[in-house]
Length: 116
Image 1 (spheres, rainbow, N blue to C red):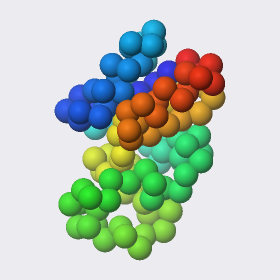
Image 2: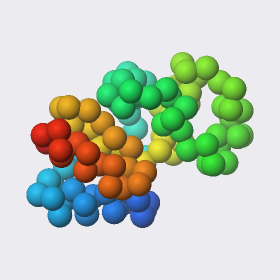
Image 3: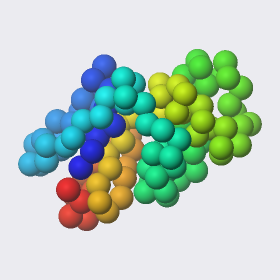
């Protein structure tokens, strides 16, 4: 399992603890320091089965500064790749799918699927 993780985010830290408490030591991707490419964001979006807007932190000031409220999917993906702070966090990714850890317990759904 891979966890797109921001150690400064309480929800991200909580998701990591939950995974560890359930015997999973995920590979951490500090996505703010190692931003995903547009292709990686698309792959994760497909695994999440959500539109790009569902991956966005719409309350982030940069979201409004960039005028993303009415942007199309391609522009949203490009914005997340260029500005990873715009992505919801954390995101857990397994062989069976992905989950946004909002609330953090959502990452545990992947364990029920055998998704290590």
